[in-house]
Image (cartoon, rainbow, N blue to C red; front, side, top):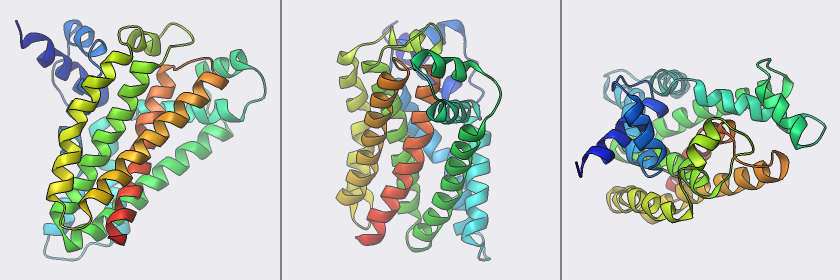
Length: 267
């Protein structure tokens, strides 16, 4: 019984954050929503899985153009994780450009129609993923291990950023956001940090170039995204909704990847 809840929470996290067929049940979902640390915990496996296009391109006997790898990376990421969280990016993009108060913006979040703001936000995130995949390919040309470490680190950081909002945020209305935020509090941040620490320590020790700087850049990027998302959501929406959580995951991943690659290149 001691191990039942953590295992169920991990299954629930994989079912929520990816399309990996783990057979999620209501019990898994309940364990997951009460365990924010499960998000960065499954980030290790998801990160390793989404790095496969970069690994494959590095191992094939012919040179694959980095941009092609970048497109494959973005496409494969969508297959592995689904596009549900991108819906949060689109909704927040529309809400960010609408005129009105918090109630008006929340109404826009519930509107299934895609507006100009959402279109631009989606385009920027997808383009950012393609560019990040191409940039990581350049890292793989010099060190495949470093490239995989960067992808995993960015994925764990993105999940930690999302989990942090779950711990400190309050939802403005009933829904996915309230189901997650109501079950946890700031004390759960300790568990999130504890689960994230191995990614930071492992990357710092294992990277062949600029370990400490790369880790600092990638994780700082995730923290900054989380802080900005939290501040914006509280002032513009009245709290952290499910769309905010999904968008934070996507934005923190993209920003973390670019920050990590830049730091690696400069080291």
